[in-house]
Amino acid sequence: MGSKLLAIGVGKYIGDKMNYIDGTVVILSVVEMVIDAVLSGDGAESISNFESLKILRAFRVFRIGRLLRALESMQTIIHVMVNSYKSFIYIIVLMFLFIYIFALLGVEVFGGNLKCSKWVACNEIEEYPRSNYNDFTKAFNTVF
Image (cartoon, rainbow, N blue to C red):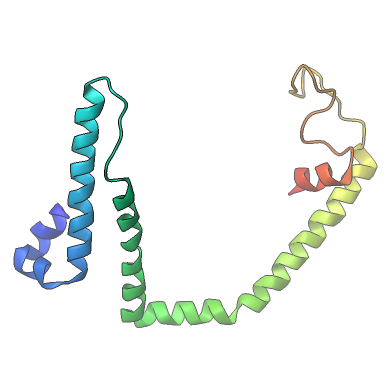
């Protein structure tokens, strides 16, 4: 907020309505941090009265929507991403097919063979490491 005020000046900063939300959120955050520091300095448990105002920080994200509508190049990128989601789904299906195949291969080749030793770290309780190929579910997780 301070660097923006220095860069564009107070007049232009006040002229943009979105800066009202940003300024309010920043000022309330600073006040919250000061109150939090004062309360925690007394040795008491830090309880902030501004917990519900933290939701206002999320509203700052909506500024991105305004920015996306203003830039034609961003609109082009978004349209390309929306139009290419079908191809992305095929890539995901192909990836899961490869993971499935290699998990089956891992169960067949390494199932029950990988036990804890000085080279394979485990808990004292477990006989096998968490990432193993003893059953298909663990093998799928291990390959993923």
